[in-house]
Length: 325
Image (cartoon, rainbow, N blue to C red; front, side, top):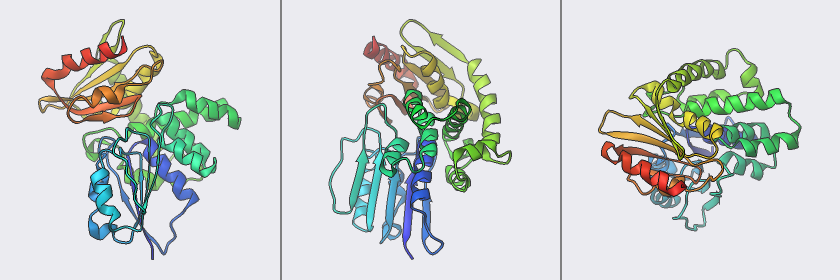
């Protein structure tokens, strides 16, 4: 019996990346699969693998920052058979090891689902498109839609599913979510393709759609500060606000391509959770900005800060303004 440990971000990109891989390289009934995931901001996931668990395992890590996991990657490499790491976040701490294979590309037009799709030569490309849409890369997805000759309806369904699964990943803990990401993966991987998910009245899509529509209406009614340079949205300390924060940022960025978008969510602990979206017309710098602050990080086009002291909010907003003007 072989042991497989699948580590993945709990957002659309992480879930759909793993679905692509496991549909191409399924785990048999004689083998053991262990899933390690969490909310979208829970990225130090390799730390959850101890030496006994890693022993003789084949480990896959998808869509979590290498820089946030490098020490634990080094640790488990001394025990596992192999470790495959695929991601698109900032990676300044890469190293080589005989048991380590990495596929990392930090360009803002790339997501992990696209990297996996390229490895698999379009074998599960519809799942990849859901990942690309979920990560807010609509223009990239459109190129593939045209290449594949998909209908407008199919395109809209893939986009909505990607947005909804991504929406499910945001929260302070799994208790904020509609589905534990591990459970959501196990439900979705049983479908032949993502369009079946949308068309099944009993699928997770239906509950996520209802929740998303309710949460987005509350976000639209929240305090918004808009000027010529940027958009700042202030959300309250509530599960609905934590769930919608990142997806709402993606939506505002798509409709205001010339402006950065800052989503500020109160966590009632003397700090704010920050989601930053770089302007679509200049999709760089988000990770550079957020990394200047403790608990910050991400990628070029989208980044965040887990706990920004409240008295640093004005400073952060001015850093964003200065960077993009």
